[in-house]
Length: 190
Image (cartoon, rainbow, N blue to C red; front, side, top):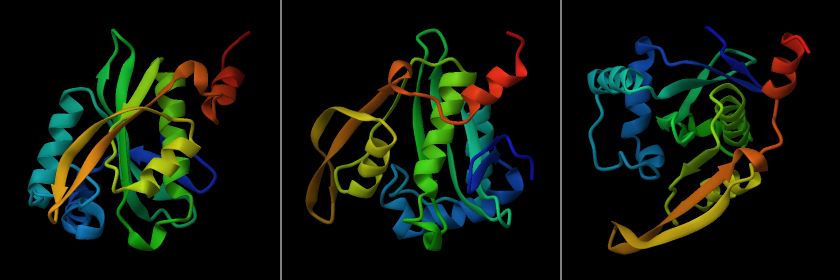
């Protein structure tokens, strides 16, 4: 598989249409989909492929999250709604392989995506909107340097209970760089 951005334990590779079936399976599993805006939808391999094609056409940068040790696909992530004029984007990711949760792969994926967004795309701000019922994601993003910028109260109702949307962001000036900064520097003349 093509490796676009390598970390210690995972790498990000361009989304492959032939993986649409596994993405569709993960996005239909309650354990994954409940934390995503896709929760109430039925995802088929065809709709997954269509989404990838549409996202690529509008300029989103989507990646498969893959283990370095065995090239196993474990999730997906990317930078969405990229605004190159105002230099901002939304980040999103999920680990679909349930056995790979709580092992640091999400945090490493976030750091690689931030590095890519700030060092390669020259973005100034990256944001996301997790739900208050997903403290694991909120902790992960805070660990990676995101700050809570605000919240919309009671915007999601699941099983009769109301939850907030948490607005989080990070600025380029707050991100020290991860892997790409030094690698890019070593490739360019001084």
